[in-house]
Amino acid sequence: MKPVYFPFTFISKPVCQTLAACFRQTVVYQISSIKIPDEMQHWGERGILDIRMPVKYDGDKLDAVVKQYRSWATSHQGSEIAFLKSRAHEIPFFDENSTRQITADIKSKRDRQNRSQKKSDPLLNAGLFLHLAREYDIQNLTLSQDLQAIEAIEQDFMRDLKGEDQVLDEETALEKTLENHDPGHYMTKERIHAWSRLMQQDRQDSGLFVTTSKSVFESLIDSAPEAELVVVLDAIPVVDKRGEALETWQDELMKHLEMLATHDWPAPTDNINTVPQDSGCEKNVFLSLYIVPGKTPHEYFACYAENDSLDVKDKNKGTKFKNTLLGLIQKYS
Image (cartoon, one colour):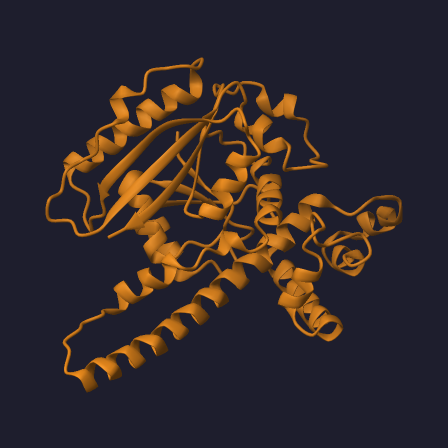
């Protein structure tokens, strides 16, 4: 079993390091192989990320359509962000009218002939949303880093005037930026809905889903009154190179979490209360883990993936998972 990162398709370096502190490999969904960030590809080659595409979208056409859509949105709404906010209440924010031309550009001629008799394609809308969301997240993070850099320069200037010593390296500045930068705070429910549609198409089952977004995590837990806190793992060391002891602990952790996801609840959790020790580590990770008992992952996320084309009963055939595990993982110094 591998943990699946949600509801984002972009992972920054600090986020990847945070995930790697707990898990040997984490699954992250992509819409297509077009424009996957170089760093993410590098982490995929190293085996830290399992970059997975549950739906085979045409990346070139999708990218071209997104550019056309952005141009249209800008001319009609003033900016792409303003347009997204104006449609925040709609799931997905692309409705049948606004996606009529977009859908026509992607579908085949045969599909176009039947388009007038069909409603908008939820899976296509989800792909378009996640494609735009990824670009928004990358651009917003870059802007936040730039603003943080300006603030750091101002602080350096003031310290120089006061004769104070300070050293703020680029990585520390980036981590400080990410502490106040939660992309899941923006259009939280819409992100979960779009990602859930993609997840429903993944044929490689997992019982564990993790996020670094507190906004997303709280939204899910609030909507699942049956969810129970399993355990909180504190002070998990973040290291550049994983040694044998850490990898052994990660394997044991995943073994126990798979047991929780595949067996009837309640089940013992004592074996996962310990974390590897690294006295020289200055950065640590904590993991809060909840279980949604009696619901398979496809059943749990089905409430977010409305109008899905595949029946949940079909997806549950052959699955070994009886429960769904939801985790919030965050870094602190």
